[in-house]
Amino acid sequence: MIVSNYLAKRFEELQQRSEAALIAFLMVGDPDLQRTLEYARALEAGGADVLELGVPFSDPIVDGPVLEEAAQRALRQGVHLQEVLHVVRELRKGSTIPIVLLSYYNPILRVGEESFARRCSEANIDGVIIPDLPIEEAASWVNQARKYGLARIFYVTPETDDERVKKICECSSGFLYLVSRYGTTGAREALAETAIPLIERVRPLLPSDLKLAVGFGISTRQQIESVVRAGADGVIVASAIVARIAEGISAEALSAYARDLKEATKR
Image 1 (cartoon, helix red, strand yellow):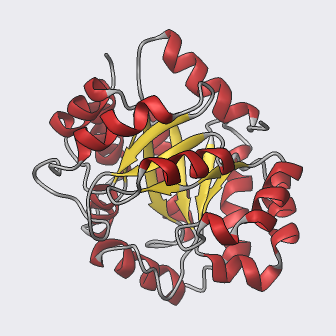
Image 2: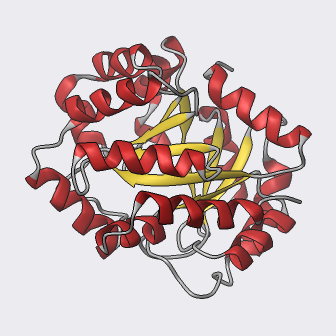
């Protein structure tokens, strides 16, 4: 199993420190490219362990209103894959934080799977999440990702039965993205009732070298503490960050928010 060194090394370091990974999401280009760079650096300074960067897309089927509106704002700025890769290259000039891209399949199809994988590898991206690519149609992508050393990150939802979980694990590397609840993305005040039982069910099915990260609806320390206690290796915070950016949060305040969330990942 080939996994980018940054990502594998970070999970190994966190395991030694008895911590889970704080995976922080940004929509690239929201509100503009320069602010994306500032926010990314602020999140890292605040303790984020992994950055998940979104490639703006016009029809994000699994995203709730907060992320959908962020994608529309970025598209109005003219941000597409080329600009996303530029942001990654700029970040890489001063950081080795693991970076994963979230892209719907259409932008990948447009440039071609191999070209996309190669360009990601050249930019030192660690892995890719493709929300609308089921494993039944992913063989070609899996091969290209393996070829270029990219982690292959797939979703498991509350509806995914055990046999399908095992099949998804066979295609995956880096970490498995556990969707904690039904529906689209979006911060929630309470952790979904499906989250803990799902972690407890999926955890024993994972191969030893595949980590488990939980997302969808997570925004508070209490929620993070709950999923980490249940066995998560990482927590993904997306809509709560993007909503704060939409409200004009300063980089310093976003860094403080990340610092508060990071404390909750310590076992």
